[in-house]
Amino acid sequence: MQFLYFSKPTNKGTIHTLNMLINSANDEERAAIWIYTFAREVLEHNADGNIKKYAHQLCDASSGFLSQRYYLWHHAMRKLIPEIFINYNVYMKTEFSTIDAVIELARINAALILHEYVPILYSSLKKGGKEPHYSVRRD
Image (cartoon, rainbow, N blue to C red):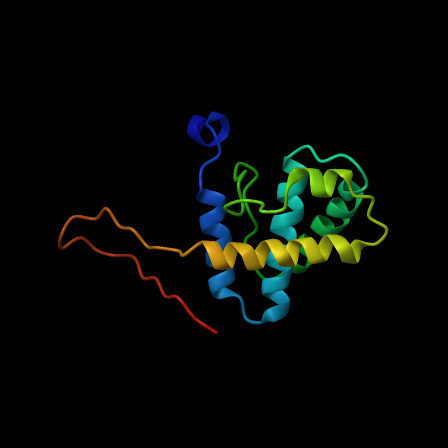
């Protein structure tokens, strides 16, 4: 338990996000996952400025929607996506007038993650060990 609570962030949250995306039923669910993860990462990076207000609104709305369909991220999962490609100064120095602009940043970041990262399943099981069932769906 100490490892989960007191160590540096691991990729456990990113793996959970990937599993949610794999198991998502439609574009609406995938969009909510991407929006929530981006907004939460922005909040985790001590965002100030008015993006913080919109990030809170996005987390509340998308977590309410997702909690009816998925087991949500554990509070010890600190890193939900591999990285934020949007430069910190862009969202800290920009005065957002609508929530739509923050949603667009989440969309851009999701597109860049999908372009830059390829998920790879790694198993350390010994030969003949029972492998867990994994399936990856491509839409």
